[in-house]
Amino acid sequence: MKFLASKKLSDNSVMRSIIIGMLLSLILAMVLSMTAKGIDYGVSPKEWSATVLGNEAEFIDPMSFNDLLLGIHTDLFALILTFILIASVYARMGRSRVVMIGFLTLSLLSLLTYPIGMLFSSMIGSVGVTLSLGGFIVFHLLMIMGGLDSLIGLLRKKF
Amino acid sequence: MNFKILHFVTLAFSTLVILQASLGVLLFTRLVGFTPHDVNLYYGDKSFHGLLEVILPHTLFIAIALMAVLHFLAFIQNIDPRTKKKAVYFLFPLFFLDQFSPLLITLGLEFFAVIKIIAFIGFQGTLFWVWILIFRQTLKLTK
Image (cartoon, rainbow over all chains, first blue to last red; front, side, top):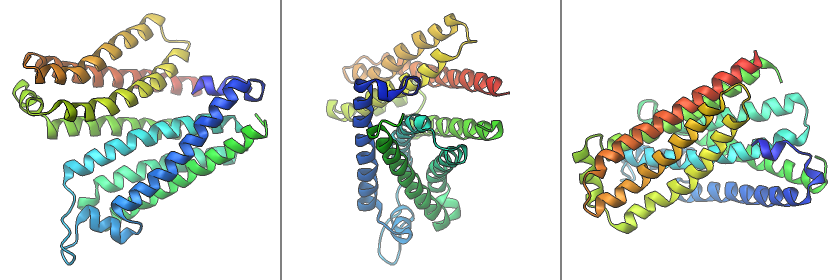
């Protein structure tokens, strides 16, 4: 957000501390989000497919479409807000144009892949779920890396 | 930043937000419905605790989301301040009406089912209009 990015943060110790706290919380939230998803859905594409699409051999019912929608809606809300906050701080890091463009493009693409893969999983089957899992992991890793990079930059008073 | 990339980033982000709003509308359609009868039926059976479970996360997240969206609008120079104020004065009351009407429905005030539907459609429509304003201006500025 603009108020995070409009002033030199190393000159403003209060704002700097607030953003350090916010980044720490967001990084923790991303780690917890992956952990919670691992417990709910599993950690492999096979486990995710079984949870979302069901598995007759193991007597697992598929997830209802309403539950799937509700899950995606809740996740997406939190992930969009996380993206806005981390990307707005990361934009001040002064990284090269290629790194910045790569970070933004990959983050947005992976964040789009997660809900779209899930929504179309009833049509394209486990491919959709696997794409969704990939998008989910890539997005979380990017946010953790971007958050850590910004955090180190702030601690070293680089911006 | 390369303008083509900026266009792509803007387009991808707006797709995400529109997808999120569409999911909300789809959920409302599937779970609740768009007639006053449907709304009364859905919320009439809910307990106070059940309503809180929906209202609390929405109040928290939408407050942050509206601040994030409206602050983009506030910093765009070539939009009339009256239009910006209009967006703020519409969005917050509609949001409160949308979230708190179910509480009044459970208290027996069935008329609030109509208010809930109007507030929900109004809120989504106004938010969509604000995003269009922001992205149209962003694309104009990057040309």
